[in-house]
Image: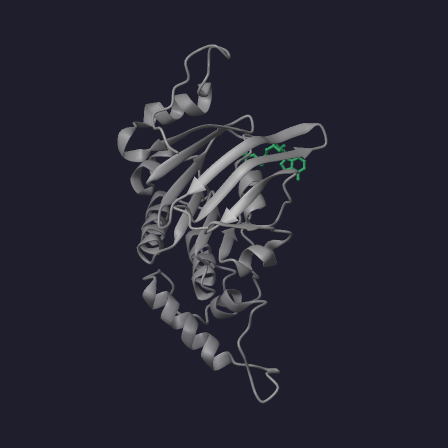
Length: 262
Ligand SMILES: Nc1ncnc2c1ncn2[C@@H]1O[C@H](COP(=O)(O)OP(=O)(O)O)[C@@H](O)[C@H]1O
Ligand SMILES: [Mg+2]
């Protein structure tokens, strides 16, 4: 079945014990778009994205990638479909350099039995990625331990690109960054979009979304409130939707959907 969407999530539900973290959430991601995911703390943003990256299993609902129904039981399943996620609590190996972090767990090998590490190819590829992404890292041989938060995020992006991710999920990548570094990371994300990636970007920083996203998906209390076209909304519109939701006056109030879709 052909689909207009690179990802469709249908009726996603998830509970953690007594907490109903997600309730019947539908999401559709267009090819090559940047979609912001926003909502208050505890709205369910990370949970929804972890389900798409195979880190959590949904209790209910279906996921389609390029029109085909998929079953994501673990991150490897998602990776095989070209879905990569960069986590909030970014995990890099501090004892390894940039290149080894990019390739960790998926090292290039050589030799007749493929048992030897192909370091030369990995450093070469890492160098190419750094050049290509125009990121602020002097050498693939630098240890990541003393790198800034922004540089570490860039290493994680390079890793996603090295392995041909088509869909990249980022969970609050700019949260811990200063203004300059956040700006550099945002231009890298734009750059990834230009390379054809479809990107889901969780952030609390609404201005970041307005600057680089095509659409913004608003969650509140585990429910989808709206999907807004960034070109048609203001910061206030987004904040109001995050805080009050689409139906602030009860179930009979007219709902505020800025954009119709379907
Ligand atoms: N592993 C977990 N165990 C128990 N509760 C969880 C877990 N992950 C998330 N939750 C709960 O689910 C809800 C949504 O959390 P989360 O997706 O992290 O929200 P957000 O990322 O929007 O801040 C919260 O009430 C949170 O406490
Ligand atoms: Mg979160």
